[in-house]
Length: 167
Image 1 (cartoon, rainbow, N blue to C red):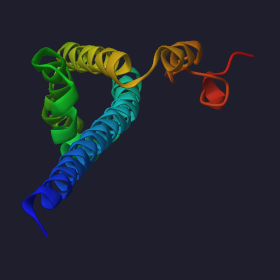
Image 2 (tube, helix red, strand yellow):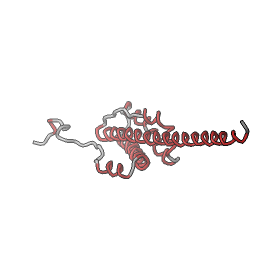
Image 3 (tube, one colour):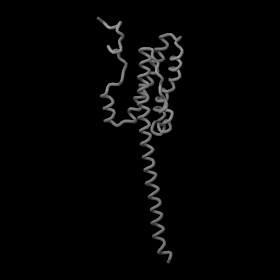
């Protein structure tokens, strides 16, 4: 066997290895980005539930616990698809949880202070939701989210005590 017979085989093997490596890197990157988009969606819905809890606290003084497990677990993936300002908007919503927790356990804060803090936390959640809505959802999904009214706190006859119902 001569060297001239080996050269086409070696070139073919080299091209095959480089091609396989390139395809696997492209597929791996695509999978990582898909997980990052899915992470953004999970954090979006966690923030939406937290937004509703903050509204409940603001309207009724009922402090439900705020979730942060998706955010803590998925932050590295989020950091790959968000720029610094967007990431700061999302972390801003979560950093307010300590103040929310303090307000839920210590009821000696004046009502005006508590409302101001809760309005600030609510605004941070709304801003973070807007950032994630733009990043994590397609145009058609954003239209669908906009068409569905957000969950809000309303007093209805089912939630109004018997004594307070008009007669």
